[in-house]
Length: 266
Image 1 (cartoon, rainbow, N blue to C red):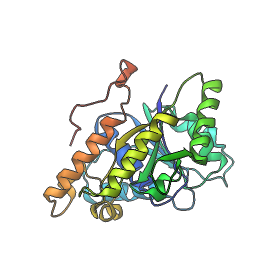
Image 2: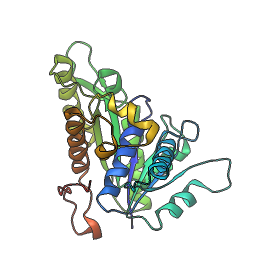
Image 3: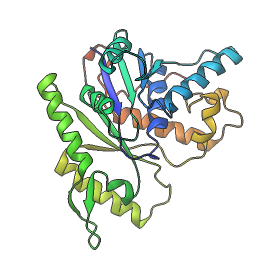
Image 4: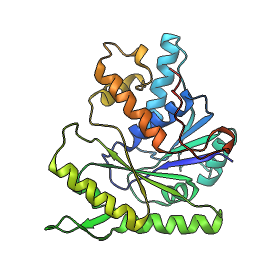
């Protein structure tokens, strides 16, 4: 059975699609058979990103690591579960990018998730999605509605698939300078992780390069194709490698759930 990684967050602007597409390409670069599915029919960020990547490959004649991919269109007759089954048939890993809203299709993808990834910006605005924080002490008062939604999805998956969900909260767009707000957010997330049961790992930092790569569909693994690649790009690539290792995905064949620490193919 393929391993499903679902990127889900009801709040927009958290770098969810950027993280999803970089993860799909990074795993393909490891030699994995990866399929990617974009459920955001209107914005189609992941689908458009991979369209651009395919166009760059045709234009330059350079063979880049590339997952198979599709974009869900509810106007077509194919049901969401049928589409997921179809793209997963030949895949080892399936990466699903959901829209920044709650809808039945997103919930179906969450129930399928072996690894559920919730990217958030490093701020109390995004933290409020999963936990309410006291205004005076900055301590977590109680979990929020999204934590309850994830709990319900995990319960449903346990009943229907007999399997658990590894919930990973990803701290995206972290500043590279230590700040009091960063420490407070980190402390609140650590407390909340113990209460509602998620793992906390670092994601991708705040860098302009992620916005510049979209038109060509390139990722930080494609440094040979990036003009004027700098030391900051190499540092960002290392962030990506550490994030993928933090997912702690099963090894090929399912022998182990330890993180892959081998260097990615370049």
